[in-house]
Length: 306
Image 1 (cartoon, one colour):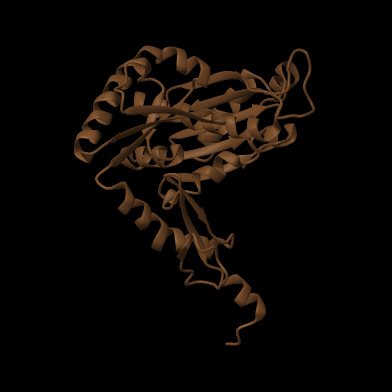
Image 2 (cartoon, rainbow, N blue to C red):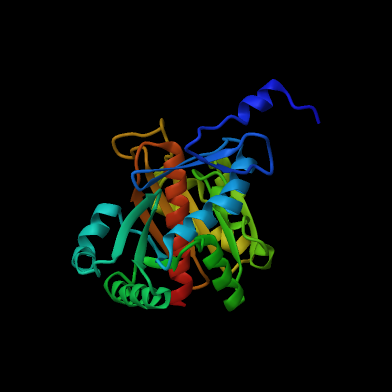
């Protein structure tokens, strides 16, 4: 190919740098060492950047690290806010070994706790992390649902397959988001039978057989309505479990009695219906995400209790 003036300009680098080759493009990366610190400059094109990091930068950093080892483990929690969780595990956190660091990583409805251990013996670090997790599980067993990259919907799918059970959803304010999360899991057709998005009262009545009297007396956002949604969805779609959700996602539609963020979530099985009330907040998408996470975790607990 023809080398342009622009290509020649890209080839000009400071004398103090080590050139990082770019096999995917023409702009090189640069590696500087100054006062014991490393500075790296690489192109912003994603596939070029990724190749340079994988092929050159990570190996170069590892070679400088010598025998140092770093071990990460992430504990996944649901059902408790970051501040409350921090108070609950404060003594455990304060007594972590000096080479173990804890980071709080909150997201809508979830808090991830990432433990990082540094040392020279990787196996020893793994044992240290495992011991600390064992202590933590005794403190907050009801809030831990998984580890590392496990998704709540994947955990639920595994449980349903293991027990040979099926699931349906009846969604109002979440608008199918719960079903969306469930169907992200490959092989979900083995246990997920479908979803009814009953956004309007007419759909709740005509498709899910929610009594007109229930809607008039209690409203669409109520324990009574969600209970009927959960029971009837499970029966009509002939599933073992159902999730039902109705709420006020916002930003409009709230009142003093039923504010934005009010959500009722129900989980039904053959012998019980559990409905819980939640007050999330004013952000529409975050409310939908939180409702989804809380609904999935309610189902997880119900399956485990059977």
